[in-house]
Structures are given as structure tokens and as C-alpha cells.
Image 1 (tube, helix red, strand yellow):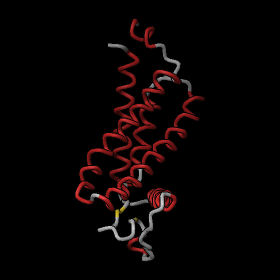
Image 2 (cartoon, one colour; image 1 turned 120 degrees about the vertical axis):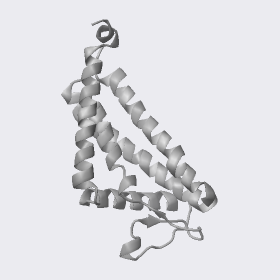
Image 3 (cartoon, rainbow, N blue to C red; image 1 turned 135 degrees about the horizontal axis):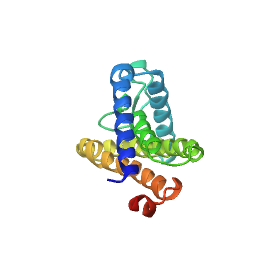
Image 4 (cartoon, one colour; image 1 turned 45 degrees about the vertical axis):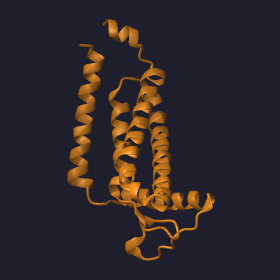
Amino acid sequence: MDRDLVRFLGLGFVGYLAWYVVYQYVLKDQTLVDDYLIHSMVVSSEWVLRTLGYGLYEVNTPELRWQIGIADSVGLLQIGAPCDGLVLFALFTVFILAFPGPAKRKLWFIPAGIVLIHLANLLRVVSLVIIQYNRPQSLKFNHDYTWTVLVYAFIFWLWYLWATRFSQVDPVKSASE
């Protein structure tokens, strides 16, 4: 088996396991990072929805501060810690760190990828709010399946982009070793 592949799989597994342990036993309860990400997601989603011409519920109570919805909708969409993107950022970071490539490039590619994942998550939230307004019966399916597949496919595409364009790893040379 290709040693670069074994290295990637080993580092990826160890990195993901370390992240999982830290997340489950240290960060699982909502943290300040989660609060910041959720607040950013709510404010950004509200801005996009207003720009698209939607009127929004005014949520002014602390217990509803992480909820967003279009006025006259059947309900509000709650953004919780599992949906703020933090786990996705960690998964992406582990993928890139585990894959060979120059550290200088990783130093800009990881933050750029995190920003792109955050924007994809913003698109996800905005679309789910619109789905909640127009077709509330399909919200659960789109939340659980459609957007899960799309976001993970996007992260895989970013990793593929790293592996084929930015890592400077020659796949022909690696395969022949």
C-alpha cells in the first residue's frame, strides 16, 4: 500500500479521534466559539434574507436569540451548536493537515477553506429558512439529507482541490513508490 496513503489515513484517523475526544469531553456544551459562530450565522442570514426582500420575525428575547424565521412563517429555525459549522471546520482542517503538502500553503488554504465552509453554511441556513416558509413539510428532509450531502461534498471537493492543485504531491510519483 502507498505509504503516503497510509500516512494520510493514519494522521486523518488520529486527528479526527483527537478532535472527537476534545469535542465530546471539552467542547460539547455550547462554548463562546459556538456563540460567536451562531450569532454570526443569525446576523448574516438575516441580512441576506432582508436583501432578498423577506420580512423577518423580530426575536428580542434571550432564549430565542439563536432563532430566525420569515414573518408569517409557520415557525422559526433554530441554529444550535451542532449546526454552526465548528465540527465541519475541524474535519476540513484535519483533512488538510493530514495530507502532505507545504506548511506555507496550508497556512492560507485552511483559513480560506474555513471561510468558504462558513459561507456554504450561511447558504444552507438561508435556504432552510426559505424552505421553512414555503414548504415546511420538507424542512426535516432538506436539513437532514440534502444539505448534509451538499456540505460534506463541498468539503470533499475542497480537500480534492488541495490534493490535486495545492499540495504539490505528484500522484504519479506517489503511486509508483
